[in-house]
Length: 81
Image: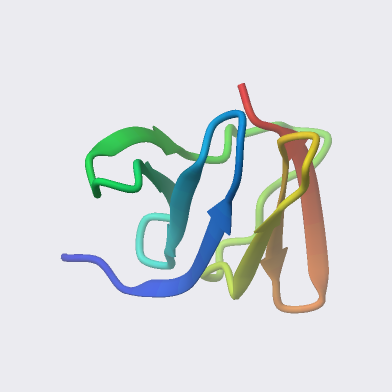
């Protein structure tokens, strides 16, 4: 069904990257500064903390490589692995 990117964030060293969030697949794409796709992250299902069925509305990445995913007024936090 395609993609619809809703956010963009740059991170600096040690692993300088550009991240973008696709609201269609709830995937976070990591690109190098040369725009090579490095990795794709997707939320994993967890019965204790179910992910909303709606599309994500935003994201952020901390200096400690934790990712924040927002679904409306709900915020989910996880380490990037």
